[in-house]
Length: 378
Image (tube, rainbow, N blue to C red; front, side, top):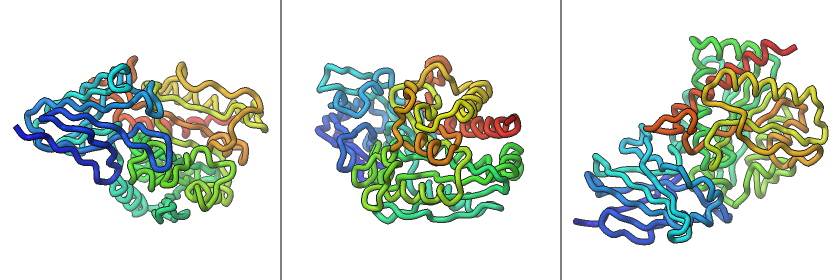
């Protein structure tokens, strides 16, 4: 029987084929552009119908987050619409760390990825559909280094300035799935949460902060190796024009509430990170964040507060990170939302694990929590 074929020369594709033998392959993940990060993979297997595939991704002890591979199952799709999970196992002692994916496709072509991809074409569809909705305005904040637009959608008539932005780290695709869910809520005239929020707030939404890294199949950086979430203190047109454009726009509007949407490779739950440790910290500003966190924890079964990042000590916050910079610069209630690549073991969904659908539903819970937060603000 002939060998399977593996391709990745498409939007966000990323894999190196080391060898193929029948329905088995030895693979590796290339480094991000001008960077030492590697973790994102996305490739197509053809010639696969009815064959038990064994796909071995090697060298993962040198990946950006080796702790992300144990208990992780790759995502797979045969129609690029529904993304399920393919049984996977990790052996840290095999070929410097190997993830073995096993799957038998019913059709001839199957697609595998680190998480369900969110293509730039889908991004443009999302922006266009939202921009055509009543009361929504679109502007291009600037351009990436490759000349792609940094899209911003604005809506709402209220005084509270809300900024929502995602995919500073392009391989965290669950962040733009979250954005799709958020925009569906905010642009649906029949959705009472969105309708009430638009009365109370002026929203500024950047669904994808890093279009170059997204298209190139990077996990964490833009086209010149800049980690955008470490550029917020001193962004430059030469290295991080994406951040410079967004921060300049924030300076124009001011920021009262901000959520930077991400994914975490190792922690298998959704959680928030705040801005503890900023120089201007006050308990009053901090309590605004903690109150929102408590509301979201109560409203969403897919959110929790037990696991998360270690809080910074007083005066030690990294102001090159967006949440800290925005909280310090504007006195805002700012936060980072993290979603998992793995499934939550306390609330599992065996067919899909954490998924685009759950990301979108969490967005609605986040917005409903924002509405309650605004309505109960003393």
